[in-house]
Image (cartoon, rainbow over all chains, first blue to last red):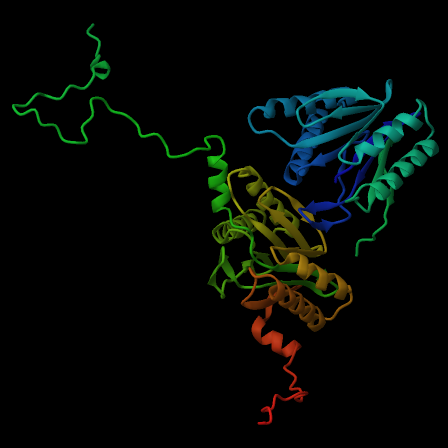
Length: 199
Length: 272
């Protein structure tokens, strides 16, 4: 039911997540922000169990900030991804966190990058990826239409195609989605795609 | 050095004159095997058996004048109604209240604990704690006990410097900020009535009536909810209890008995 997907374009990376907070058959909230801004140039899109989602990502965010305070320099995206994966791996055999993560970041000399981190601490650097039931539609659409070096307009067009497909084909499709991008100017919210407005 | 090997010796009863042993005397100590067929799952089943199923209806929503909080008052143990007069709205401090769904003991204890922590915060920082802060304190405590069988589904409602605040916190560690929540087995019924009648610019009386009506409809359809519909209002001066109406009486107020004229009467058959 929870859908998170993302891709890397020309000088930017985009992460899209649904915004429903669900409890068995009830939708408690349709405007929950699941894409955390880790620091000025990093985004963390998360899907998974409610408590773990908020608590684990806040823990990662605070530790990334702490590194910056202590060392006066920000972590690279690769370093942040490896740190996150290390925390998941350490906890895996004791007190596992049930969260799936897409980490997107922009480094000055490397450019944009996207990392796939799943709940059993798998880490892959990827160009496009997706989690959740929506991944069944997102992955094949991205495989078909993605090419490296897509412009922002092309990428958002692909994102809208994926959202439309999820809405029409997934039986318990989430109504609203949030799009965030990270580029050389930083991580920011790009747009909402709402089909039900939250009162 | 002489080693103490007394633990390795098998127990031999001192032989008495008569060779009569008590019937439950065995040659060596032995454990009874547990009477259980499902060795892997019995622990999980035990926790599930004790875990109450949140049989209740509670709701809260933010509107123009503040926050309305409402709840039923029935406690059920399976099919047995153990009480119709349970206080499910817990007063944390004069400007913050919490609702109870799930295990009564868990909710009461941890809300009281939250009240203590909020007061300590006031004393340490010389200012009241925000609703955001209070709900985060509770969520972190519940998260640290996750997987241990706590059952808490609560809403923290209050008024702080930023205005009205409402958070949903549960024992799985989830914490949601929102404007409208309903928790418990009767919550889908309450959500439906609440969502269809909600407007931001309700007056206090209209909002209270909407809450009362939503609780009533949930108690009508949900067997685990009933008793008394309590409605509280949280405003800039703190919380205030507005009403507590028995839902049975509310039923006849909303749907009064209409005496209808007799359409057909059964009459004696004419004797041939």
